[in-house]
Length: 100
Image (cartoon, rainbow, N blue to C red; front, side, top):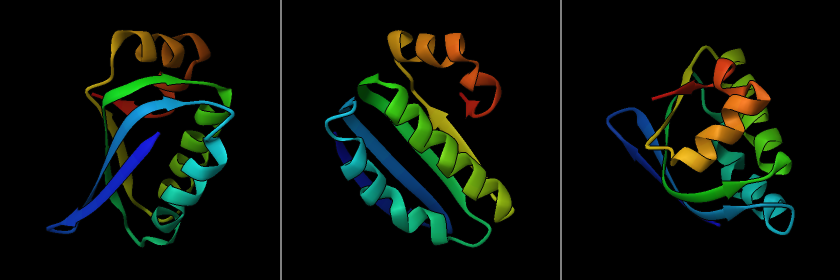
């Protein structure tokens, strides 16, 4: 999993590439750790190149959503591939996290 984080005009853009599973979930959590400290965050996760997420990945996304909400911000996931969106739909995460 590759994670690229950019700040632009008060918004945080995160580009996700590859597979997010149990072998790299810990590294992913470390990569996104700075996002948990943002005040009034406005975060967009671009999932166009994300191929897969496991339950460990879903857990990391849920933790990020909770942090963003508690800091008065917003989180949106965009460009999700159908096979990844299906995982979010089946697990109910698409009702918790804003997906466009």
